[in-house]
Each structure stands twice: as C-alpha cells, then as structure tokens.
Length: 277
Image (cartoon, rainbow, N blue to C red; front, side, top):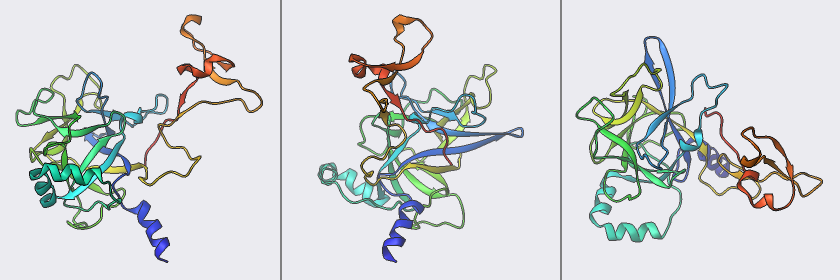
C-alpha cells in the first residue's frame, strides 16, 4: 500500500527535478488565448509567450517552454542560504533527494533548453507599466532575482500544502516582490491578441497552471521523452532517414541514405511535444 501511495504522489504532486510548462489563459473581448511561457536565450534573453490555441496546422514550439523545478526552499531557509552563500554552494554540490513543492516555498526554475534561470531583470523596456520589470533568463542563480514564491490561487489551498499538478497558482519574485504577469506590449502594430501580449513582473496578478512534461526521476533505459534527438535506421539495412542537403535545392526531400551521412546533422530528428494538458 505504501509503495502504491508513493507512486500516486509521483504524478499527483510537483517535485524538484520535474520538467513543466507554465500556462495561462488571457481573455479579451470574448477571445480566449492559451499561452505558455517561453524563452530563446540566444541573442534575446527576454521571455516571451508561445500560443497553444488553434495551432492545428502549425504546432507550438514547446521545446523552448520547458522549465525544470531545480530547487525549492522555505523563504526563511532561502534568506539564510543567500546570507551564507558559501554554505549554499557546498550543499548544492552534494546533491539530494527530490523534494515535494509546497505552497509558500520559493522555487528556482531552470530553463531546460538553455540551462539558464527564470529571473526578474532590472530592465523595463517591454511594458508601458513604469513599475514593471522585464522577465528573462540569467546564467547566474545567485541572489533573489531568480527565486519565485508559489502562492495558491484558490481558497481551497493554503500555505504548507503540497502543490498538485493542474493547480492554479500565483508566482511572486522574491527580489522585486512583483507577480509574474501577462500584459500588453508597448507597441501593438495591429498584432493579434496572442502576439500583442508579453510577460513581465508587475504588481498585477496573473494565474498560472503547471503542466508536467516529464517526471524528475531517472528514465528507464530505452524510454524516450519530448526533446530527445534520434537517428532513425531502416530495419533491414544500415541506411538512416535523412533530408536532402542544401546543395540539392531549396525543397527538402526525405529519403534513406547510407555512408558518412550518419554523422551529419541532417540525419538527426527531434521528438517534439505537440500538446500539454
């Protein structure tokens, strides 16, 4: 019975090491848009929003939306660790077991695509709100800017309770004491609703839900998860599935090849996630 209950907890509650997507729904003039927090990290470290509404023909790029729950601590423990940063580095180096995320704790989000941390930046260039700050990625996890306090959005949840998969929650940046928020871009330019929205840290609340992509436990050998890179081989030969090279024209043709092509990037395929609940 105990093992069965632990198995249920594995999927029912959020734990450190889990890879998740932060989702929110924005409503304006009877139009509902479902969005995921995303970031590229290369060239532009500001976070953006990836629309997942009405994307049947062109699926959303969820590879840039994955966030790993790297750590969770009580706010008091976080303050103590930041005060004694040398002890923090020593404890992190030793590793540790996976911890269940509780309401009221501070959490550290690691962007899985870039290996950087979700942070409240000191700039304020993307919003018309003069009191808001940009949200983006930073390489250094020192300081309070990359820590977010998890608060329940429902009165049915309270501080100290375990955060369940699918709960609506509120994220507050420890450093700026501002909420992770959706707002309109400073420049509209006749954009669609989803393209005119940005994410920032402001004094207005936004409800977020957490959709898990992958549990943080070790995968059994031979199992795949979203984002893995594959090479597809023909079952009866050494040929691998490739696309035509750029030298052969603009139109890409899929076919099997043998030889040195197996060491080229055009023989690699990425397993993408098309939908999150």
